[in-house]
Length: 239
Image (cartoon, rainbow, N blue to C red; front, side, top):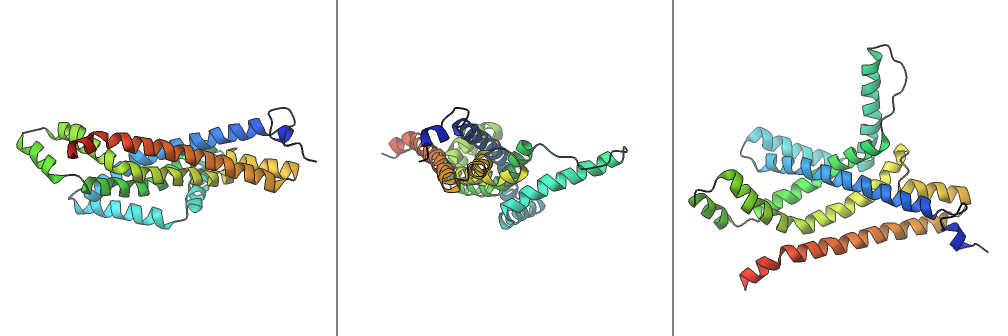
């Protein structure tokens, strides 16, 4: 008879603390990738919206390529490609051999680059959903572009973008499991180690699935709450 209280506990024979740390690392990698993606994505969205044809072409190329390549392949390219570049640079100074990159940093950057392609589309669609009348009124009032961007464009864009960003966040959380191929001890990697060590794969993979489900469920509730708050004043104004 399997003692699940001991197996998933925090004692010396339990995996509870390891799974908790793995879940924390998963959230940290996902947060890092999501916020990096927000920065890169806003720049890509600006390039696609800009009237400059070369910038628009670069933005379209970025989203087309990154959304068309498997996410796992992007992680491999960053991890092994980055190591190869560092090894080549180190070779110029006489160093030989493989140079590994920090798994956490590689995972966060790779996820950020991929999620940027999706967040760029969210930001672009949010910008296109803005009321042109408000922007024209701001121009007519002589409002400076920086002030108009901060007080009108950004708040309105975020209100429209929250549902889409919530979907991208859920995607990023699931993508974080792919970072396990770099050896980072996030939730997926920890689950694999526990399953192999105890020879109870179903039990631990089910536990991992439940933890992922808990993370995504709480995230969904938080985004739903944020969306409701962002539309509160807007809904009252419509009435």
